[in-house]
Image (tube, rainbow, N blue to C red; front, top):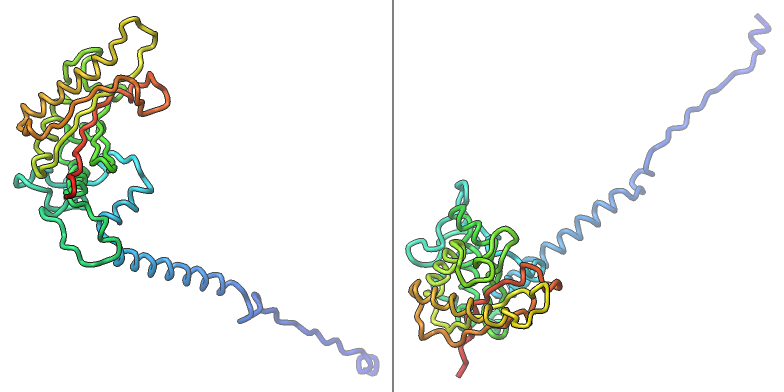
Length: 273
């Protein structure tokens, strides 16, 4: 008994460790910083939407995808191909992101209002952008088309694809695809009264020829497109020029690429008096 009474007492002390340093940890600071950044971005977006015009917002969007096919915007419907026809009720598409009002909006004094299009070129481009989705044929046609707005006007570029040319090779005989596109353009151009220019471009020949056909071919194809537009109901008095540029202005770096076979329809800006 005396031996047990004199035995040393062993004390075990357990230290409680709190992970992350309690309220002094840094994880919540990272989460809070992300939240503040997101809120700042949100309020900047709201400010930009309020301080810019429709055409300016469209320009900002196009900056991030400057070469966008026309079929990039559906008509907004919920069917298999999504959207109304571009010729719904013989006017502009009624719904979807690509729809536009028949009359331009009244200036509201917001910043940059002086940059508004005075001749509805942006409305025409929006109409064409909302043209896809109504049928498989039109979706396929839109693969051939791109638009851009320049100081000269609205340029609508119609170009060859590797598996689907606009004309029979080396001729001015249009393919059914080009006929469909031309008919659509003749109807769309009816919503404005801007004059039109028609340009023809071809790719370079693989060898140097004594009688290089590219000049005559580009001019003849441009004139053929002019006649097709007129046959589709376009007013011939609005056509100001028909020009063939041969292979002098290639669209891509390879001068013999099929992509260089293209036609340009330019809705010219109205002269401000």
